[in-house]
Length: 344
Image (cartoon, rainbow, N blue to C red; front, side, top):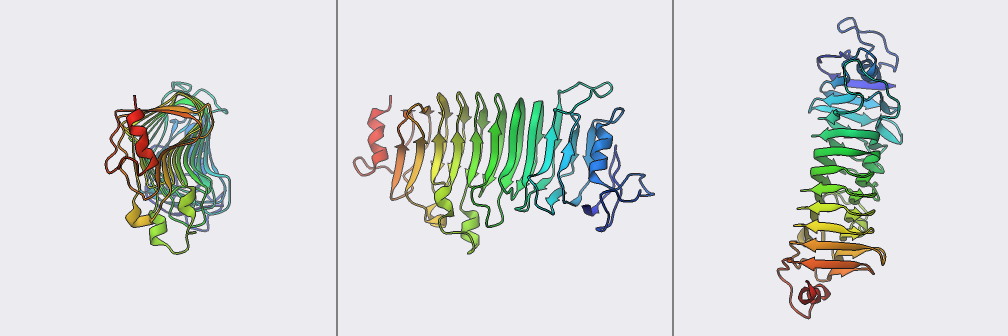
């Protein structure tokens, strides 16, 4: 059953107003002529002769099964639209370009998008699976309380994400990841992750992250039911695969700022900070390498001394530090400071 708690009028493809008791195959609404279901709205936009864009009006929509978006349909949500998981499921929304038909007069696969609104996993589902996609844009979407992921990108490339917000508000979701990119040649700009255990995890190759801010500790500082060791598992940026570029990214209060598992990573103008006043977190590492083959160039970064026990680099891999700033470090006191004279 899909509930529509409240919604307003909408344009293009219409969705009926419905009561909370409306079933998945609820009655037609005389005002709009729609079936009264969110899935029907999306299917109508995706059908031959449809607009290719499902306009979802403001309201809170409670779903007890995944919303499936196929046939390269785009989802345009109002900023006050909330899709919320009302039952346990793997993903709240699944956008899959594998099942497709050419829409009349439209490009087969270019310029698809999801915009606006909130996808709320409510701790019962990951928010979004985006798979088999090319030349795809996500903009101004929020992802709340994803059980395992806020968003998982898989099997695709040229995904452009901007203005995305990921936030964990509920306890018991330790181990989740805000944004997992298991694909190549994608670009994410102006992304914020708050209180997901892992902020952004990129794999495969040649992904670009720009002005992404990952921070932790807000949930722990506000709720007594969060495990005291939750922050000890946090990683702001996990970088696997090879050839990724991070530019002006900010790891803000995490046990590990940048975990490098792959090769030939480049971090330009990136920063790390640990908010000890809020979290009391100690024993932090700015850059950790996972294997002897892990490698990274860190250039133009800003890494202040912000914990009694802070390590600039840990692990068996190779990191080249160049033209970085290290305010607050004292030579011979912290192991990270010893790296400064060795920077090329």
